[in-house]
Every structure is written in structure tokens, then in C-alpha cells.
Length: 338
Image (cartoon, rainbow, N blue to C red; front, side, top):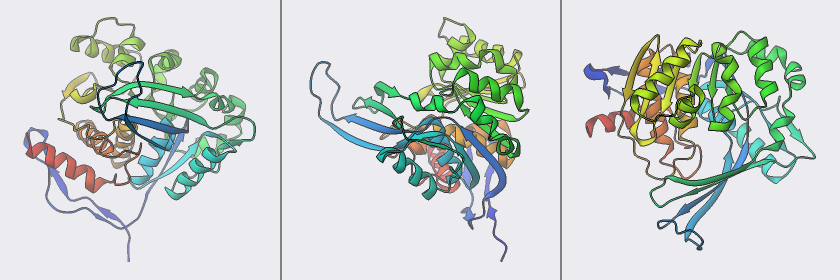
């Protein structure tokens, strides 16, 4: 029996999505290879039960789970039925082994990663207000510097075999430069933070798809204003410098997209119902998945925003129920609700 995935949906007028029948998934992965390079860490999440009061002990729900921008993206990509390999760095400790086993169980090929005996596994602490919005985050990511240009050179054949590279800017400046300068690949980049986004400034022409948030985009473009027109200006700057597609996320408001000198604002009425940590990683995975599927940009953005919305329904950084069927159902319900 031939194993394949059949997508049964259509795009109706005014760009809404309606599921016409179920997606029949029969466990065959996409035959193209995605290589994600970047950070893995343990996410420690504190969800306040009431509005946070500074200098006080606030009642909260506290949990931990495997995380990290690259690792989260890789798991989401794998959950969407794609072959995914991950180059990352973890410690030879309890959290490192937890991350390794989680990757293996999620179908991520992690055998080309570093597990170091001296440096501890990276950790990320996020504190969320009672409305699920992030209040504060802290991170320790020293081990990522083990991914040097010399180490990446030893993985040259793996990098060359990938159809898509996905990078996060937790990588060192030197390692990012090495990849940009030595591999003519379709490269997707997650900018991670305002400070780390600057590492890609001299290599924007090597980037196929760029996903910053509003603050990261404006800072990277050197724009101080925060108006919607300023976001469009930032996207235009990226395009003139060689970025083929950019999607600037705007939190609950949606996202601003730019491709081939065409821009559009997407408002999705997304429900940040439980935990916003990991929404951007799911969105990036949605963009990668959509590209592998050959979907047009407008459809890809809507699908990816649906993935981001679904990610927020889980206390864990990656929603275990993320798949095409559930993303399309989220989009369907969103459109039915106006």
C-alpha cells in the first residue's frame, strides 16, 4: 500500500480557509531534508495566577520542558511530517539527556550535535503575567559557542545535503558568517532578540526568509519609529538588501508580510490562551513546511499563524498536538468566529 498524505481543503474567497474534509495522514514524511542549526535549552516557565506584583512572592504554576529556538523549530517541523536534522549543543547532564531523548522521540535526527562534558545545558527562564503575556525572561546559553566554524566545517557534507537551512541567531557571529559565506542554500533565519539580530546585518542578501518580531525588525533596519508604516519601511529595507521574504510578527495583532515588493497585514484573531512561549518557533516551522509543500506566500503566512495559535494552547513550549489537520481546524474556527 502506498503511504502518502492527502490534503483535502481549499482556499475560499477573501483568503479564508474552510476544511472540506479530513486530512488523511498515513505517516510518510516529506522526502526533502531540513537542517536546523542553533540553540537547545531547558525552558523553565512561571505562569502567574494573578497580575504580577514586583518585589513580592507571586502564586504561579511552574513547569519545565525541552526548549530552545532551534530545537523547538525542529520539533515542530518534524511534527508536520518532515525529515529534520538538528545541529545543536547540550551538556552531558540531566537536562542535556532530557533534550536528547526528547529529540529522538520526536523523530529529530540529533546525532550530529555536540554533547559536552564541561559546559552545562543552556537554560531559559520565562515569567508570564496572568494574561499569558511574557513579563520577563532570562537565559544562559554559553554552550552554543561550542558550535564553531571549525565544527561546522566537519559537518560540511550534511549541510550541503540539506534542502533548507534554518538558523537562529544564538549562533556566534563567526559561525553565522561561515554558513552564509560558504553555502548557497535556501536559508530561513529566526532573529531571536534585538541584540542578537544584528549578527545577520551584513548577510541579509543570503537570507531567503526572515522572521523577526516588530522590535527586532525595526532595530535591525535602524528605524526608531514604531508605526505600521515604519514596519513596512523595515520590510522594504530588508528586500532592497536581498531578503526574498520577510514576516514581521506583531504578537496578538498578527503579522506583516513582504514578498516580491508586495506587502500585506495579516490579522488572525489568535487566542493566546495558555502560554505564548514557542509560538514564534511554531510559526517558523509553519513557514518551512509551507515552502516544502510549494504553497503560495499568502497561504503560507495564514497557515503559519495558525500554527502559532495552536502552539499557545499548551503549557509546554511545543504543542504535542501540532499537525496539519489541527492547524487547519484552528484556522477554520477562527474564520467562523469572524
